[in-house]
Image (cartoon, rainbow, N blue to C red; front, side):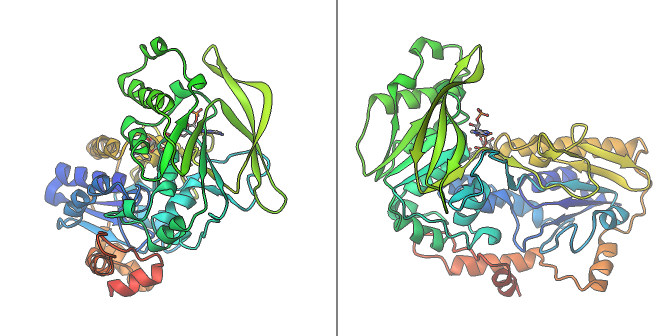
Length: 439
Ligand code: NAP
């Protein structure tokens, strides 16, 4: 019998657990840890609340979670309640699947001003992550700036633009729904430091901007390259650019504008006591490289949300690539020894914040293949680690308040029961509330 600890119960964690069961069947025990009392990580608190079909993948993780040999161990923070070294002493392998919960630094003056919010916090707020439930963003201004040209920037612009009716069927938290309904915004500016050909937005998500009830996308036709320049683009990217062309050609007037400002690099955020604007340098692409033109202008605004990518949270003692913002590993393998077993990273913790939810499936299966190799080669010591019973003894000794999958099911039932009409659930946003509902 082998014992695996997976840290993180998001997509990477559960695909890895699924792969372990496929590989070893009844000869494996997998404990999936999460610092929150609720599972599914990014699916619950990252994926946009109006993208319920994407969120439905959690049913697949639930199947894995309910198999006899996999166990959810919620409300346990590695590094606080139990150390990594404790886990390594108990399990044959520890797999870090903690994602990338922190925002990449904007690194410009003024970024610390009130009214400047990172996408991790903002997305966490509308999705009911307990760390950000009390964010209370000030939506009383007329203009918000979203920095970044990726899908997260699109999510944020879309969520800020929707009407209450358009949130029907979503699980946006009540506090965010009320705040967005009361918002005074009439323009959301999406700043991209490069051009339309360099966006990291996907076609389906861009297309959604064209279907909003009270908001419409605005693209300056002068920002678009000649149509024939689209030919060498990869088909998905070409489709995305076609959406931008369509927005530029068919300008629709609605009360809220979502304005794309391309070739616009933020250089500072200005304001006395809170954000009053973003100073931007006009850029151009020369020989495929971004260069500043020396032309500067101001975008006055009351709120700035940076959506420029994420970083993993380091774990003391685990090698970390500071520049890339993820764990340092050899394709997922961090360290292997007969004494401490195998230590691996998977998902965003391994590769950084790229790809779709589905990308984590091959990632999880690949890491289990590596673990199987390391067991077969003897790089990991013989069977005999204490595993699950050993962890339970330690947890009892330390009086750790574990939330089980059964507890989570009770939390989920309570969330479903509390849903407003038409919504799948109303999420608890406080850890204490979750734990109470699970008991
Ligand atoms: P992303 O796709 O990497 O996009 C980050 C954007 O920020 C890029 O446009 C980048 O521009 C820009 N940027 C980076 N540093 C900047 C700076 N200092 N100043 C200005 N702009 C800067 O990251 P993401 O949007 O956070 O998304 C993360 C991953 O989740 C992606 O794989 C994404 O596709 C995925 N996701 C998918 C969905 C969906 O499928 N519905 C939804 C949300 C997220 P440069 O290109 O110039 O660096």
